[in-house]
Amino acid sequence: MRIKTEKRCGCRDENGRKYPRGTCPKLDQRKHGTWNYRFRVPKGLVALVGKTELSSSGYVTKKAAEEAAEEAMATVRTGQQHIGALTVGAYLWDWHSRKNALRPTTRSRYEQFIRLHLDPFLGEMPLSGLRAEHIDAALKRAVIAAQERPGRPVGPATARDVLKMLRAALNDAKRQRMIPFNPADGVDLPSHQAPEVEPWEAAEVGRFLDEAAGDRLSAAYELIALHGLRRGEVCGATWAGLDEAAGVLTIRQQITRSGAALGVWPPKTKSGRRKVDLAAVTVGSLGAHRLRQDDERAAIGDGWDNGVLPDEHGVPVQLRELIFTHPSGRHLAPEYLTRQMQRIARRVGLLGNVRASAPSGATTLTIGTRYRPAQGTWTLYRDREPIGEVTVSGATQQGARSLLHLAGPLPVALAVGDEIGEQLLSPKRLHDLRHGSASIMLGGGIDITTVSKILGHSSTSMTGNTYAHLLRSTGQQAAEMIAAAIPRAVRRGHPAGTSSGETGGAVTTNGV
Image 1 (cartoon, rainbow, N blue to C red):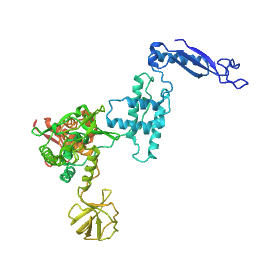
Image 2 (cartoon, helix red, strand yellow):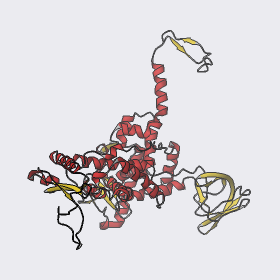
Image 3 (cartoon, helix red, strand yellow):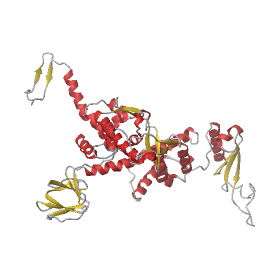
Image 4 (cartoon, rainbow, N blue to C red):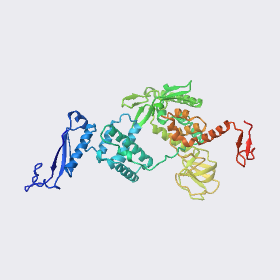
């Protein structure tokens, strides 16, 4: 490869025509014009580089042009692609389209990251010029822009996820020798600690399941709350995978969403394809559900059809023997299961929702649908937070509404949407039922390896990181067990004593 350099300028003659290359009379002047270089790419590297000739201009001196040319030559010799004016945005969209192994939900998230947080701020920048400071500034601008946009704001966790995706994309560019280094490696975001998982307590889960007992999907909620299934796994569960005699459900597929489209995919992780041991009560619930579904199928007749969804390769799959469906036989969307769960959860302990504002001191109160007998003492709630208490002596039905007669004056003014009930549940996601299952198992002393396998996590470290705060009680139990298991001649207690039988000081145990 032979380097050619020459000086150029944009001067024009007296007729306004541009001077032919190298003919401007001022080119001999030291500071007039700029230098450029060009060299031909060896035939064997043209396919990799994408060009037969490489050139660049704008150098102040001939030496600078030659040094730049030598650097470009070295890049060609090591096999790095010459990406020219390829922009960050163009590269990211192309990278996204080529990531065939992404799961639907991950693909949808990555598309959102590029569209909302990266392309608007880095899209026009040449990939070859991208640096850590550009990425850092872009992420800060993305956070500010998101605050002005309706919808969910961008927090520290999202910013870290965007950076993680960008780092992976640029690592691919580095491996393909499109860039010499990954500029995202130099970005250091502020430290962020994810909020701890705080699911419902066991008693609250029980109250939810009791409320859901009459719902046609009650067995689905049991699978999530008692056995930690993901909602997509529940939607994709089949009768063929259920062994009632052994009390085992095999998870082979899940129904999940990618953007606006649903698909049927393998479980989220390799370990997600698993056999789940079921409690006898869950097997019984599934049996009752099967009888109900048999009646629904008989009513539909030949029209009973679970539907068709694409698999991870886009190939249509006829769904068969789904355990949970609409009454028509069609498959369930995961978000449908979520909406139904939250509707039931809001009803737990609820007498009714306030339908007409009432001033403090009022002796009657209008609510909507009444879910329980009215007489008794109830708590008043606003945004699920207690704001007072009232005793109801009776109720008069007024169409779909009820007029509650209060035994005493209303202690606070109430607005439409406030609630009256007893021990209402805090708002939770359907996925929090799965978290609750893990919490109850860990609190009951089940080892983390078993819990991880039941949940279908890819590793025990993931389980430990997610539920570390739930292991505090088991850690204390372990400490006491170790202390009690080691024989010692002398145990020293607190001077005030550590139990009702101790008076402090050293205690001789005679080797026990």
